[in-house]
Image (cartoon, rainbow over all chains, first blue to last red; front, side, top):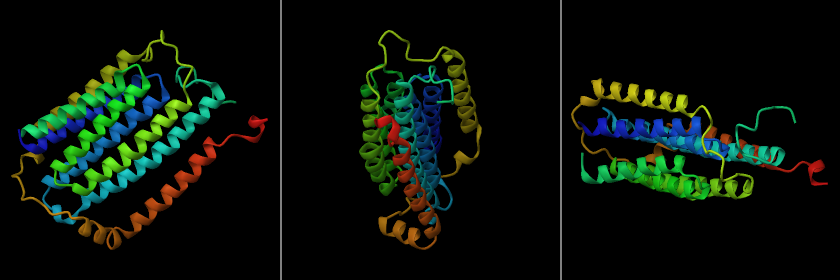
Length: 103
Length: 166
């Protein structure tokens, strides 16, 4: 097994764990945690392909990972603000009980 | 596969699995921090020093603390007897396992991962800064705009309404 294969396997396992968490957990905050883990798995892919790719001197993978970290931080801030706003309205973060869009 | 890669990979996977299976939300965030630190170690192993330290700064330093704040602000309603997973968890688990199966099978059978190992690339902070200021200047500005918009949007969404305050 080459190093690239093992990194990609770790990354796909991390993605699947994040996907399972985002799909199964009831708490809205933990769904966001699952999405963060999926984005991190993508970052690991970017860096692994940059390191073992044919043109590492172009720094493209590094740049993509930097911008991906920035987008993930913005997503976490807005997502948690939404969770807090929903909690104020429904007094719960359980996604099964949040089932209407009307206030 | 070196020993350090094995340790860091197991640490990351276990942290991620614990973060999404534990019942106590604060414990979940602690396990999540473990997973983020393991990932930072993996980035350092891949010779991406800047990304490794940015991972610690942004994820462990900012995102995890933000999640702790959100957990503490939305506390008090979760009942201990209720199940932590939704009723349709079996289907979701099958979907996630199928995704992993397809990805693993594709990775194992792909020819792209059989290339010879290239020499260690150089990615100093100076090179990254030069690239950000020249070739990637426009994406940098766009990400700055996005972060500003996210900041303003998060404050606006989480701000209390005036009627609610009365």
